[in-house]
Image (tube, rainbow, N blue to C red; front, top):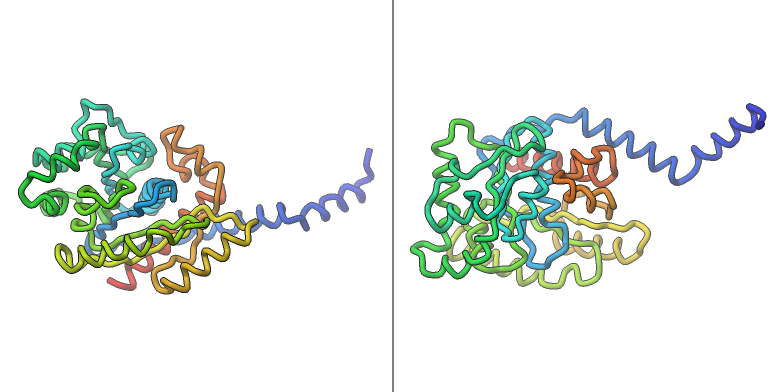
Length: 304
């Protein structure tokens, strides 16, 4: 059996390890985000989360920012515009083929209040789900009148008629630049782009910014690229830090200072029908998303 002095020495050695320092830092950050308050925006902020590259954390970013904002007492509406329906799944929303969804809103002019569901994730969080029918919406939209404006019209009608308009509307886009994404760009005031901190991260970003500029010129002059969030950051690699610096160089005012680390918990959470914030709120990924949400809200308050 070890002498108490030896145990004390072992403990002192542990507290000086990288793991111990990380645990202490995470605890400090968790306390800090819990203590911070978030002001309601003066008008509803409509933000499209988009990147035509798949696997960059787009849907994960949408649902976790939504959950973090709702946790701060804000009313948040998530519109799942991706036929895969992953945002609906992560928020615990039923979205089988017989459920009324965003498809009926776009194609059949069904009001949003008829399809919106309350998420069991937390109070104040609602979702317009996506079903498999949305996969054919791109083709069906082509022949419709004002095909690029249909989501915008639906959201404006909802905001003007609902008793409790949301503080935030977050639109999760498919990984493409088709008519669904165009509808999201026309409906929004802001675009948030998640960028993976890996090789080819900036590939295609110029095409996306050109598309945003084209939408600004022809369909929605109020649209702006307001926010870039760096995701899947692995501090062990030199490449990740190089990518982060390159993005900050090109977009100095849009990049959030919060960076989302690569995290097992973030990847696991959707399979349980949860965001990482409700699945493991003390994990590094959850803390980072809470910090990003606070920073996003703070920037909006300063602009407003």
